[in-house]
Amino acid sequence: MPSGIKNASILTEYLLQFTQTNKRYTNMLMITGGAGFIGANFVKDWLAQYDEPVLNLDKLTYAGNLSSLAALQGDTRHVFVKGDIADRSLVRQLLSRHRPRAVLNFAAESHVDRSIHGPQAFVDTNVTGTFQLLESVRDYWSELSRQEQQAFRFLHVSTDEVFGSLYPTEPAFTEVHPYRPNSPYSASKAASDHLVRAWHHTYGLPVLTTHCSNNYGPYQFPEKLIPLMILNALSGKALPLYGDGQQVRDWLYVKDHCAALRRVLEAGSPGETYNIGGCSERTNLQVATTLCTLLDTLCPRAEGGSYAAQITFVKDRPGHDRRYAIDASRLESELGWKPAETFESGLCKTVNWYLAHQPWVDDVTSGSYRHWVTQHYGEGEPSCPAS
Ligand code: NAD
Ligand code: DAU
Image (cartoon, rainbow, N blue to C red):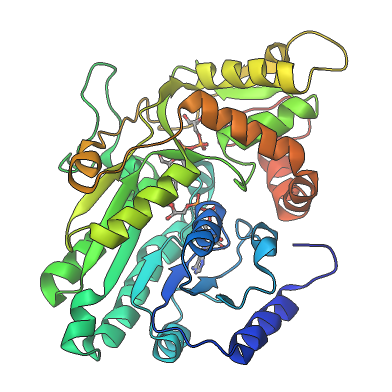
């Protein structure tokens, strides 16, 4: 958040702007978790492309950051409300007042390491929160006209982690891969997916579920691998790789993910699930070395030599999934989406973004994040937070 501006004043300001606007909009989206990494990218990209307002409900946990939305200050199409998806009375009120044509659920506790240390918040938001949100939405939806009911969508943003871990030669996850979640995070996401599915089959709620792979790009909180590595490299700290660094993830540039979500919202069939991947499987060691090579060119070390010298192998994450890979061919063949960025082009954009946005970095690396890093990585040599 720009220094000196507090949440409450931003909220009041947005609400005031919204009520003062002369323009009447017939359609609106409700986004939950829109101050987080993917949600904020989605909201900004949406408003850059469409003249359809967004109601953004976010609890502003440590991962929610209004400075990621600072460019929207003064834009009356963005209505921000600080609140919990589990708060039925608030959500019901917001739905009645703003009458969105769709709800996109990004809100979640999203970091695997944190789920290992403290699973309660994951069950509270990802399971109970999704349940409460579904019930609020079902109440609202059931009172819509038949035509509005048919047009309505509840899009639930899930993850490839619900499918568990793949062996090196196994084919990538398709939409029908069995669920085998291994961490408290992925188990809580799997539970939420099952609730969403059941609300469609039992009550007819028109839901869409997406499973995406590891996102990276602007505004990602630096507890996740790529921003953590960029910022540690630049500040001369170690680049901690868990275990042998041979775990594989399929990297998806966040703006490609947002484009896929827009397409699923527009043309996905209710009750169906869609995989979204980046076609970019890399080991964590490959990610780290590619990043170091990029930084060596874009921002050479003052003392000379490569940033790769800062790579350190640390104790592994408990229950660490070895490999994720997404088969996104359904999305390509049925809805015509495929990623625009390669891993190399997306990573280059991401590194340049972090280099150019020091105030955002300073903002998120203060406060609770610093406390988490000190508590779990310690002040000295880095180790896996779960060690
Ligand atoms: P994030 O942690 O950056 O942001 C989550 C946002 O949700 C934050 O703004 C937070 O304040 C908000 N939030 C948390 N609990 C809430 C609650 N009870 N009520 C309202 N808001 C709440 O997460 P992200 O990386 O942007 O992920 C968004 C979604 O995408 C999540 O559902 C996540 O599981 C899923 N996902 C993420 C990735 C990834 O690589 N980041 C990959 C696959 C799926
Ligand atoms: O696959 C989708 C998932 O990707 C999302 O559902 C999650 O919300 C998101 O956090 C992400 O989960 P991962 O556990 O894969 O992401 P993370 O960035 O935490 O770690 C990526 C890989 O890098 C993983 O194998 C663990 C490893 N790692 C991570 C950190 C933070 C390290 O080796 N060192 C680190 O310091």
